[in-house]
Image (tube, rainbow, N blue to C red):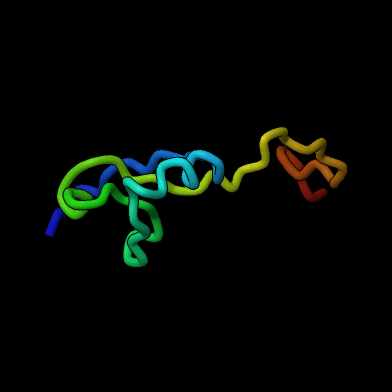
Length: 68
């Protein structure tokens, strides 16, 4: 088995629906791999779950905080 993991490429849901015929879901990797050769080579795609626009933080600033 391969010891070096392939880099994950994060794509949006829309692209995964377009690429669905060429990719299959691998539960062990929790990602989509290329059909036929995905076990050994090819891209590994994951769903981009990060928000498109970062939200404004309205919480307490805790960086560089000191307890006195």
